Image (cartoon, rainbow, N blue to C red; front, side, top):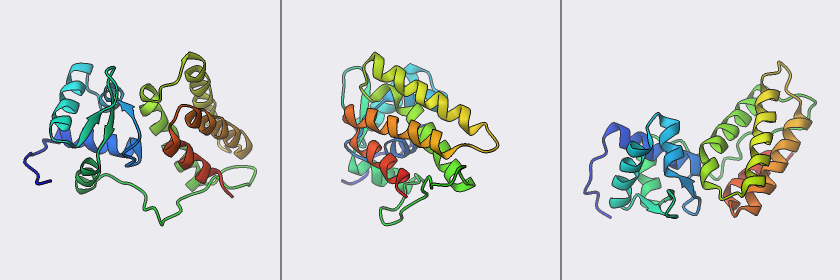
Length: 183
């Protein structure tokens, strides 16, 4: 596709946030409004930004309630715009098996939790599943405030989150968590 658009700063930030939240997975779905809220935009502004990107085939509509996904062209443009996506060949940090997490694992858990919070509205979870996910995320947040976050507690919360995501059809996000938990 020949680029016949020019992204302003807000649109570029929105596309990058969408790409990073989905991990560049073109099958993933998130709420356009949650992405906007994460960036400080109200629902109207978030909708307008998403509509522009949809018009340029960088984003596609997934649900009538505001679920969107990034296209392959969108991933390419987001990478050009500075999106950070881990290289598939690069294994990335692991949680480890020590009694407490190290600095790299702590940072990775914070990143995963942050991305999950941004994508909450687009996971398609029913009330019980959403409540369970929120409780797991709160437990992770509390554990990360400790000077010595306990690996076992974080591991169980992340296992639970991974199961919920897999059940909701969010296979790429569940797989990312599974890989992070591998020893």
